[in-house]
Image (cartoon, rainbow over all chains, first blue to last red; front, side, top):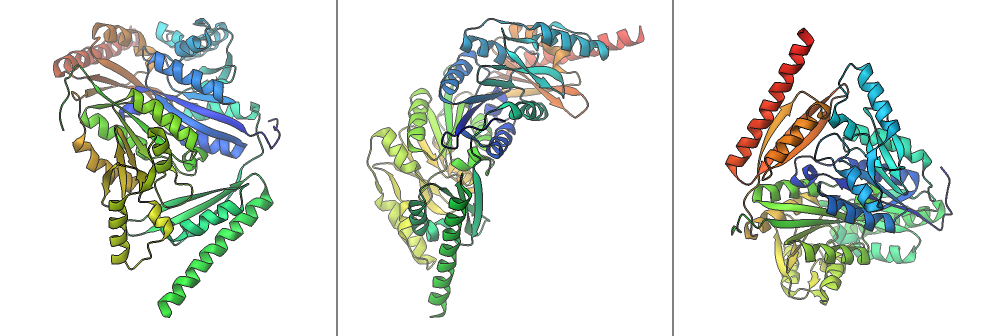
Length: 257
Length: 257
């Protein structure tokens, strides 16, 4: 990975494609995985969209996202059936012909020959991509994903998506890694909201998030401080911890007063 | 629920709001739940976006979605802390003042009084909403969601999101319910892709989806036929089942030939 200057974060978006995600039939697992991997790599995932297997919807979303972010990662719609239209849609978005890629045909033909399976017309669909696209190797089921400019087109099946992503990540430029420190508060957001807001103001270079949890009885809060600088991170997290201690003391003294 | 004419499907989008969803810290559970509930209700979820706790990003996405779909459901960002900015962003999107709602203040004050808890400034933030918004009752933690025109603003904590959604669904107009029938294929998409595409062409009123599964060794396929008419659904599903039987027979005869 090449590292960009810390002052210019590297940004990314995800476009998850598939009717099954919108009907509830399939619960997406790729968004959370991509979010984890990008965060660990110092790339900021800024936006996610989920659209149906619908060419105009895919084209519009892709064009909006690829213009705005350094990278766009897509999942889904690159299999062999009629509802797999991602290669066509990406081709339309880039105004490129969508055609059978010679290398992809060759590696698929080799694989099916080795498995003594017929290389059907449907299977040949998996070799279609925008002209000139680069492959993303698929160690799970061979049929490659592909890259056009800043768009990375990957499979929807989580095992395949993850394997493709593993191949892609080392080639991406990355920013200064976002570090985070988590502080657990036994108090709900209502108790900590005002002082936490003051701490955020006092530490403008950090981003302080507050995540309520509900156990069926009461709320507690996970406070996550994020920064690209270890010292700034440490200072803000220390203030958060002190704030929680102060609230605990104040509550204890009011209880026993 | 009032039922719209079957020829005019009712459409919806979701806007999930929160840095934590994009950093991977929190794995979203609301999108899949909303998808399930809407599908059961005969409402088509057409698009989902996830954006950060960033006012311009929320405003832009919300304005795009609310102009395009019958309903927009949002999750997240309505708690008491500084990073809860959804009420402000929705107000900006609708060009309405964001202010403490008198009814919301009252029910929150009552609740905190009953619990002998202080009604802090932070907690009062949860009563803020665009002027004139309708409440969405929150049976879990009292602080209400709200409705402005076709936008339903709900909490991010899944238990609260689900409870709010339960209150909202009976008030929505719904379309003819999409029915589905699922046929399991022991064959991968490469075997069924071409004949399945023919079946889709022969049944244009249905939507046939093909969902590959991978068990670590081999691919199988779940074929889902969807239609708003039971007879059309049945006819297409029958053709899919016959197609799979034919492939099985062809494979058996070629093996034993």
